[in-house]
Length: 175
Image (cartoon, rainbow, N blue to C red; front, side, top):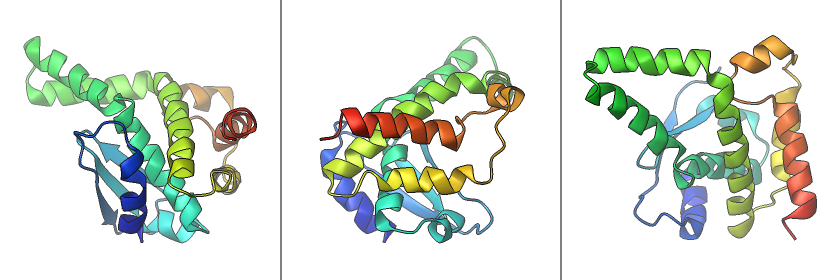
């Protein structure tokens, strides 16, 4: 199922040098998907159990593609390379990356929103219902209790914020 969705999405990608692949991770307790530089996408079995439609899954996969299309992954790799080039060992570079991610996680929130927008658009171009992303975030928000301190420490915006952003985008951009 996820491979078929990926196959429908990739013709609409702009970075043709990337060959996207998708792998299923057996983890029923984690509702998650992620990507690495080079187009490697991972989806947990927990996410597959959480979603209600191919449209929702298409959005999630397209969101991960959005990270590569917008060069978010490339920027992370460049930060690590910079640390290594400054004389840090790979283990120190990894520690630096972990500390950076922990302390400045909120700085990644704009990239998550950007990937949400890219994901909705890509899913739409591939023939999926972009409004199903709203259903996904509605369900996801039911387990969140937003507060300011947590917002500063999160890599991802709260699902309720993401839903509002996508609602505005869909009202104004996707016609």
